[in-house]
Length: 56
Image (cartoon, rainbow, N blue to C red):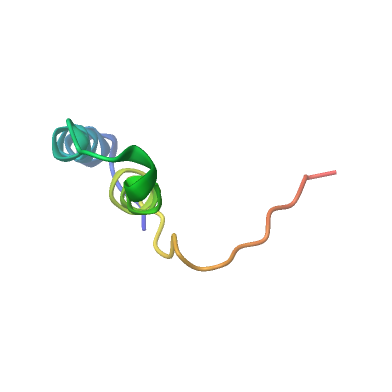
């Protein structure tokens, strides 16, 4: 999913507001990262497996 810079800025503000003062950090870490990757960075399948290559 491609998002514009304007959409990403809006999503970043919404994300920060949503997560501000959320309780137990370790208990929420997986949801936090999935939310960040999907809603701020536009990763379509943040819970799926992916393969990272070194580019060498």
